[in-house]
Length: 80
Image (cartoon, rainbow, N blue to C red; front, side, top):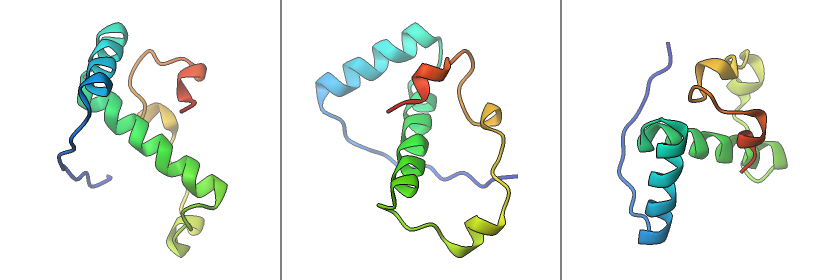
């Protein structure tokens, strides 16, 4: 089981409003959508080589994305 960490962020009003609207459209909590977007952004940075992968990551099997993404997200929503 993965360990989760909590932290706070400060968003500009316009970004917060967009995130709230997106959460409402998807029927998901704002925190869940933000966490998913951050996770995808980190993976994207690793895929592009902007963030080196840790050696232990190459040896582990990646979790099935269905356990990570919020319900009812389409494949086009995976792009950041």
